Image (cartoon, rainbow, N blue to C red):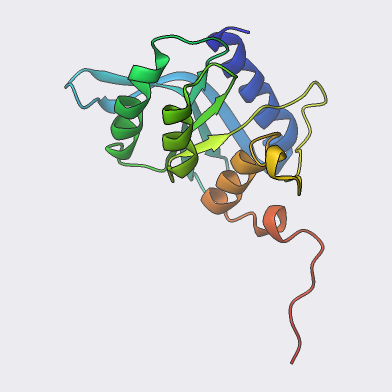
Length: 160
């Protein structure tokens, strides 16, 4: 899978799973300037139709060792300077352990690998499944747009 194919898979996932909630997805949107003073182009812009709330998404896929490792710290720093909610979604087996540690620890990163069903994939209990499925991006979307049912599910409030 290429980086562009990954971006399109994430976009198709968001449209399929959350389009019915009133979210539009825009491809390759220029927003402000980057840390280097150049026009910043983000991979995907999500906008909720009713509230006009938005979320910028950068997509990083790496299936073999390469130079993306060197770009991740800068990309996270650039996202942090964006004047709106933003997240970097990532997947693939080609990230170094150091970069994976950075991504896993970053509040600006979320693992996301939708399957062919394009349906939300909940968090698995096994430790090795922590970085699988779509649940991390789902939680970012829930927090960004106030969709608390995505996180709470069918739980009932506590009664004292």
